[in-house]
Length: 215
Image 1 (spheres, rainbow, N blue to C red):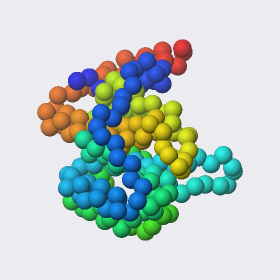
Image 2: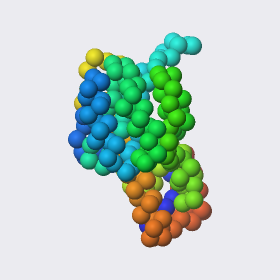
Image 3: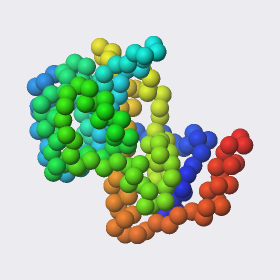
């Protein structure tokens, strides 16, 4: 497999869209959260992400509204604006036996800590994890594009994550982000084990970026 160091926005734009293929469960009560976490605690590795309602008023921000936690088959969307950060979720985040994979985790946890104190354990930051593979891009969209030649849509990022009912587009967007982190980790683990990859020549990467910026 040939890995590019970086890709342009134009390249990403031309790629087919990635979509989470599994089941999506929206969690809106404490009892639902408890059942969901019981399943998630049985998994070895999970992908995580969070969403916060955007604020268009200077100096005003909202608390994190949604925590997405995905296995390979299921993604749970915890509506924290309805349930708060419940004790079972905290226990999962603190469990050193369950690996949590994400991107810009520092930002996610900073927001989650505003809901409740906890000490997250067994977390893997993909921005750091991709470095030994020569990948220089930092965004989830570009890293996913380099590895899978698919794009992750960002169309719902600024939607209202505290709405009474999440739209299907919001649910798919949220689930795909968390699952994509897991997908990236699995592929990099395979490449690490097999050594079946090489970096694209730097000149080619630079030319691609330059060509993209000229368009």
